[in-house]
Image (cartoon, rainbow, N blue to C red; front, side, top):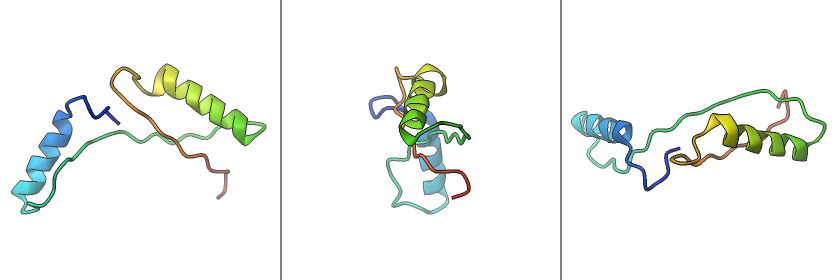
Length: 76
């Protein structure tokens, strides 16, 4: 997600469109991205470290974006 201090023109466009459709009680719309991946790791801790590293190095832009993640075992 974009950091709160960063303007989100896509979120503003979605908010305006929702209001035009009659959803006048909508506010604060922010648009982000969702990435899902499979990762093999020997432990949950190793998986968390790898996801943190991948997120900081490639999957997000730490200057303007915040990220969060959820780990889930395969097949669950």
